[in-house]
Image (tube, rainbow, N blue to C red; front, side, top):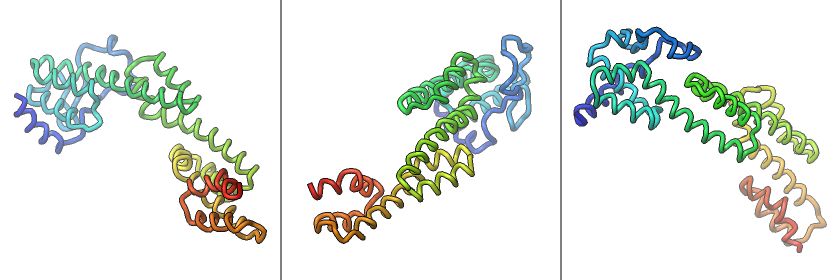
Amino acid sequence: MRSTRATLLVAAAALTPALLLSTPASAADPATAPATATATTAASDKPVDEMSEEDLRTAILRILADEDSGRGVVREANEALDGTVEDMREFLRTGYRLAQAEDDRVAIFRLLHQAQQNGDKAVIREINETLNDGSPEALRAFLETGYRLAQAEDDRVAIFRLLHQAQQNGDKAVIREINETLNDGSPEALRAFLETGYRLAQAEDDRVAVARILADPTISDALREAAEEVIDGTPEELRYFLETGRYEVDA
């Protein structure tokens, strides 16, 4: 069975995307739903109760072929494949949804730990609300859209703090890049600035600051040598020189 499954899994990976559920994420609790399943596959559009054993197996193999399937989904899908036709049918009816919720909950707790370390208040708030709801739909919605928006809220706060600091320091490149980022306003632009844009903009300002040091004819030979060495360095080297290294040279 395992070798056959491996062969089928390769074939399933080349087929249409993983199982689609005709019931939207905002649907009512499955406990109150009709007994007849409405889950279908993209390829056949057949309700689960009308699928043949081959259809059921192919649908589950598509799920296993999805690289985003987590441990809970993989475990439950394999158990269904090792079981009866009714086990496979039940997995597609409800088991997949519940296993996905298990994986989503693990992913959200990881994000919560990270947010607590970073002090991301909006992310922490939204995660707590999501976990208090606890439904598979709420967990999935947070990962698909809620996290992105909450992180953007925290990122915007962090960027305004950096803007205030840059204005006090007269860091023109940082101010310019922050204004461009805020004018864009997308979660992706905010995150990209914090992950890479800020570092590069600060390096631009730091390089100017080092050049000003070199333009001062009164500096010591040792400081001049150190400044000349660092001016073409990495953003981290420039920052260290301005914050610490320049003072160590003449100490």
